[in-house]
Image (cartoon, rainbow, N blue to C red; front, side, top):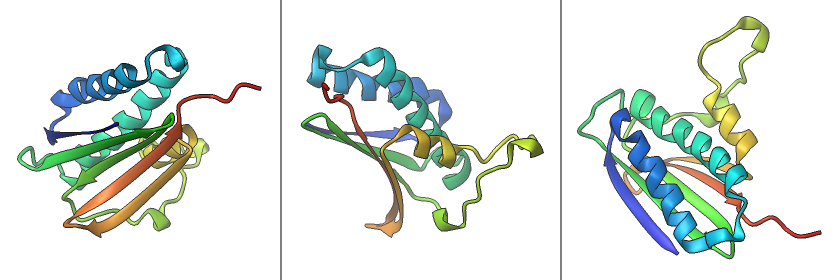
Length: 141
């Protein structure tokens, strides 16, 4: 299954983005997934990715579109969030020190903890691409 959503760069669309992602996945996978666990994980990762585009990449320029692509194959999810901003140097990221009581800067850390793979590519096909991958169907032991 492949699907995509183009949405304005505005946080008021966040619920629509979340519902679209989870609705698409549930329609495809049905009850083969532990949605209680997976929906919380996917929601948080998507909220971080989308809000980072709106706040940082697009700097609240609402006319810039956010393109979100979903590909699902054999329970493996690949989620791409495309922006038109200047880009972010993921290699320069330093995780915040909790003792510093820093308010921001946790998004990259959160996404890496929640997802199986996180990758950010600068200036691909005229945009920047954050790719999040996760296995949604747990192996039975």
